[in-house]
Image (cartoon, rainbow, N blue to C red; front, side, top):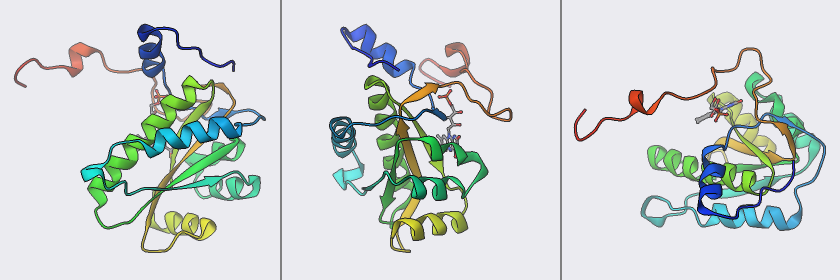
Length: 181
Ligand SMILES: Cc1cc2nc3c(=O)[nH]c(=O)nc-3n(C[C@H](O)[C@H](O)[C@H](O)COP(=O)(O)O)c2cc1C
């Protein structure tokens, strides 16, 4: 995928609107410069009371990516990404931390798209799988590692899985209420 050049506000907005979950990656690199840009974007995300609860584990080792991908059927595609960033939280305030992780994730997805890369969030889902992921990444047991964000050169943002969720979105008519619900 070629780099997406943002020349106007409309193009920037379109880039955000068109950001999708990517699950089909190809061989290729995320350059050091791109990785640095992505980590800076993550670092500057807002958080509850500016606590910046996250720590970012950059995973580039193919074997580790494959081991993480094997923990859950829904995240096997992680194995083909150039890298992943594990989002580690303290595990003291789950609602706030989950919200903050969501904000970081979305920024990473958008920034990746703007860099011409794909990105997707992969959740471990159950405590047992999360514990296995933490063990693989040396994350202390008491911390939270709900998800990782896979990033890399990609083929398409179409979901290759036959059983994936229905694509598309509800219309604004279905979503928006004016003044009162
Ligand atoms: C909390 C959360 C957990 C998700 N976990 C996974 C996952 O484990 N595996 C996966 O393939 N997609 C996962 N997704 C991606 C969703 O399936 C995706 O956001 C949704 O289908 C919309 O995709 P689109 O933006 O490409 O249309 C997750 C998304 C969220 C918000």
